[in-house]
Image (tube, rainbow, N blue to C red):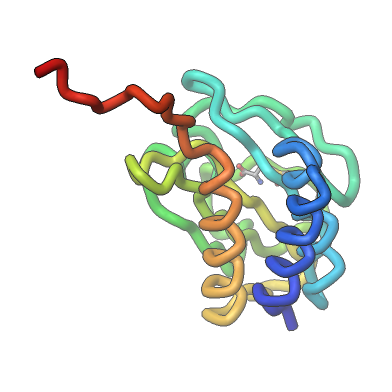
Length: 164
Ligand code: SME
């Protein structure tokens, strides 16, 4: 079972060694994939304007490297500004098949902590129906929040200073 503590301590260690944000996102998908028993595809999409762009993934290559807001499960999560746990992907119309074997999907939004704005998402697919439960949702939320903090805008020493 996935444990956010183990993943976050590994990511913290990598950050301490000077890993870039891109490297940390890449590392995160690898650690998540390894932690979950029935995670068959794990990816991170980042929003670029109105489009989700695939940043890193572990699993089979997908055609869906660019997804418009509102399209598929991934784009719907952004449009509705909420995480989505789809127990049976075949039961919904608005689904973009990544692989024929996929049966369930979980999208957890990555938010910039200060504005709360979604800047991307963790996307997980499983070949097992109903593979994602409250434990997965909770632990992945913690990982997504940690990743979101990597996107906090940098402040200059003077920003916010009064001109008086
Ligand atoms: N199934 C997703 C598309 C991404 S792939 O699963 C990798 C969707 O419906 O948005």
